[in-house]
Image 1 (cartoon, helix red, strand yellow):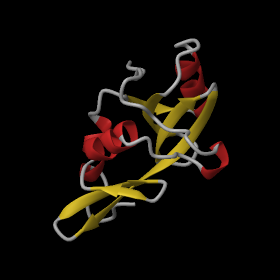
Image 2: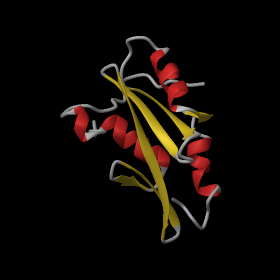
Image 3: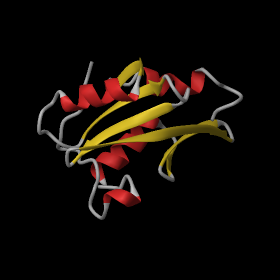
Image 4: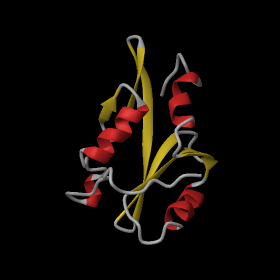
Length: 122
């Protein structure tokens, strides 16, 4: 977690259109399930339980809740999900969407977010 800029380093996440505020895992799942059978959807949220930011992703009717990490490296903030790092939160999401990066080893080969799919918004 970002120590020297505890609040400001998270602004990019908090102001992203996919951000749903401080909600529970259960509420995130309700939101993602509200899109019906559509897959490859995600929201970002602040986890009430763990006090961390999460990327909640729906893929193949299964929902995963991935921890978003941020830390200062040199003069900038680096965001990370599942070992994948980028210099901005938007860059990280674009990579996950466009490059079909696997989100979880347990989900199997090919599970990813695709850029042509829907994002759940508030």
